[in-house]
Length: 333
Image 1: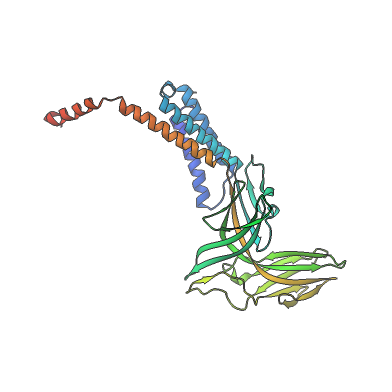
Image 2: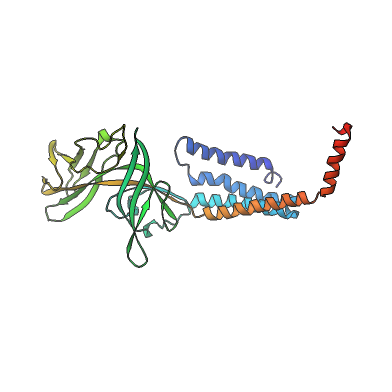
């Protein structure tokens, strides 16, 4: 009991938690929520045992409230790590959010309510300063309200789309997507988009591959831009070029398509519809955040209560007399 209530154990657990968080920031890698939750659960247990073991913490109201609130903060933070969602997704302009397309890191306790979210990605604009410095991002999304109507909302790096507690932020990850339609031998049409690597970071490698649904043929795609859409030494805005052509390679045979053109593949046909843009989003969800804030405010109030009682317990006239005698007696200087 004495060890579990020890302040040294508190310091050790705080150091471990801080080291894990610092490591995740330094290497830009998300540490498992289970791993971070372990020292936080230990802190919660440490504080609760300290309250039971230390009579002073139980008999002084301010200290009791402070330590109970700190234990709640540690426990809620552990719960948040086990239930949080950190995810990312790339959405093509004009497409609807599909939770099956996300790259997600779910907490162990998360019930995954992403499938209830509905919105459509609209057009977006990104401003750049000279020197390729990305500035404001304005992404338009359409959200379906309770009345069935679709309302528009602007999303950015610092003003997220919030649905069911999930927060969607735009990122620097964006690029071009080609809209393709494939008609197989039976006349069935499949339509979808193929994303090219982020632009302008990967300007020189705007390539991807695609496989026809009813064949084993791998189709190599190359986006051919007539000229860069940016100027490094001037302000510019991200936009979709109108004259981009699509180079399709099948069985070492190259074919260049313009929007609206069709080419045969096996027993079917491939149509290059148009070029669109895609936007990358970061998705975050932590149901414990508001409760952590509330518990933190209670902890501050408890500590303030304790400090106020400590100051009030010393008479003001006694403090003034002590200061006066110290100034008048040279031996006390």
